[in-house]
Length: 221
Image (cartoon, rainbow, N blue to C red; front, top):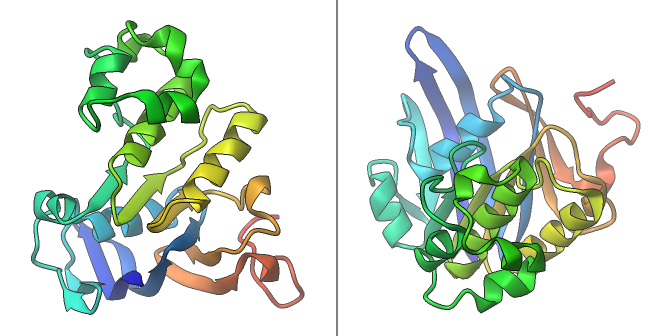
């Protein structure tokens, strides 16, 4: 089993502290969801796991090994894939060229998202937001990474495509961590570990089915 975790992690942006000693663990294969409003720290937690922001305190641990000092490119080389919320594709390259960066054969990506097939020769920067997310997620699927981190994977997607995206991510033989503002409808009833963050701290940790029960925070009215 692959496990990535934050242990008492702190992250600062200048004078502001974005994570206040956050501890969480994401097992794999399986799906972990980081929930929270904008400014809650969910994106920062994802970036801390990937190594794209440094910790000011605490540790990042991967399979029992402290990788806090390991740079992001080395984590990627070891099998970690990050799909950020923005600039997740190379806009000046075509869809085909973007896919080729992850795999020489685009068949798997096109099977996952047939909507991309007629767009293969289009520059990625001209695609709609939902189409760019499909392209970004399909590239992550093709990498066969051990750890897949995705910030708002279904942003701009139609509900059926969003549901398919979560089914694809849940089926990966990997530790998958996604960041969302709310628990997606596609995950209700599906096994998933959930952490809710608010103002840089964890306010809920448990199974997806526990959210909304009396005494459990949801973070949203």
